[in-house]
Length: 383
Length: 177
Image 1 (cartoon, rainbow over the protein chains, first blue to last red):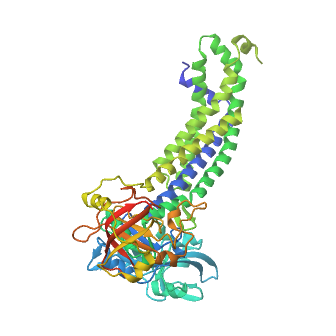
Image 2 (cartoon, chains in turn yellow, blue; image 1 turned 180 degrees about the vertical axis):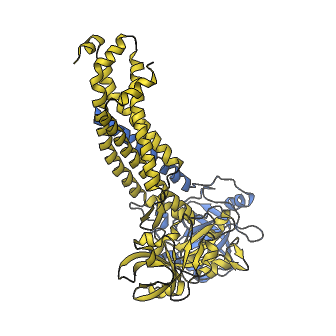
Image 3 (spheres, rainbow over the protein chains, first blue to last red; image 1 turned 90 degrees about the vertical axis):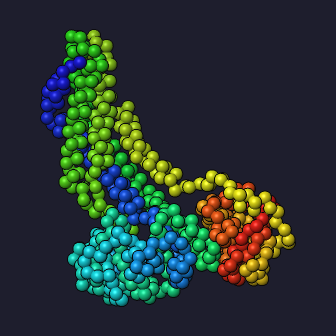
């Protein structure tokens, strides 16, 4: 084997080529890390949004869209009295009638943005126990409370949704009475108002869904049995976790597009990187032949070339990791039903290192083949 | 050679990540529950329905809780006509409801019929224990009970039934037209 120091010294033969290799691999690794962070971030927020304890009763035939769903107003009361195993605290059962409504909000500066609004009663806080009002109060009539990431989802400054600010919905002025947190869920991007207000504003007599929290997720069949025993209510039963899982599937094309875009840019960068490695390795046919002549086998030479390339690409991966931690970690990305935070965690970091390693190995093979394949006599005479 | 190698690398990266979705899809498909048949279910499935079958829309209007009724129909009328983990299924009237067959992945949901027709032409058949509780046992796959299976049921009209809701506590179930 050639000494490792030989590979390290060769790296610095041409600093411009080294910079190109490191820069190219850093770009590819950064793109791959960003794609993994976006995909895992979106999946994480959608998975965390659905609790296995919660069951959603939705209008039969509207399983794909809560906003289109029509559920009789009386359903919550009937469900509350009929389903065993509903969570109960201080005599109040965790059953929440909700209206999900999407419309444009108008802000003080005249700008407009499409928001996801949820009309609820205070019982909603029992159904979503991880949701906490962190500033202000739960809304009363004429008020709304906003998720702490709603401003990011709506693309407005944080000040546009602070406490006491007035926003307009369908010409109706609403005051922000509170800000809530529901860590890691899409709820944080929503705006919650009073059920009665939303009923009037959305001009509907029914609710969109009824959400019930069970003590034990294994009680789901009882909820489903209730829906089938009350065929007159025309309800479909969904585990909340399944509902958000379906949304994850719905956003699959978006995630694939992220990968395709990253892949296309990465392909260009990979080709550029291979060219650089070609330029760095291919002219060394004579040098490799000389090393073969003094007794080093082709395997040892290939290993040395790979060491050079992997060192350069892993340096790029390290650089990309630093950039990812500084620029990507903690960034909030909005999407159609909410917002999620990018996390540069172990999964993303390992993918980055693996990509750097892969680039180093793959990038070396074609030029190494060209360099090491000619017969020794031919190689020694080459220019 | 060079571009092919480079693109292969990108493809390997892309496919290695997209495999996760298949695992997740498998997780949501809970499939048919294993058939561990209780004595109560075995007895109901072994018994022969008796009496003349009444159409479900007619039964809804005429029967009252406690009556014994025989119904004939098909297991359909809903995206999930069987209740997961409970001895109950939806029986639909074949004269007024038709399983959708054209390019339909779930013909048992009767998506071609109106909600009103579905409401009027369906009943819930359940098997209960001595205390009147629905048995904690899925029926799908037991004794030939499957989505779109033709079924004849004899049973007692359950408490809570009305012209809007028809619940039948089955005492005999047989499959086949």
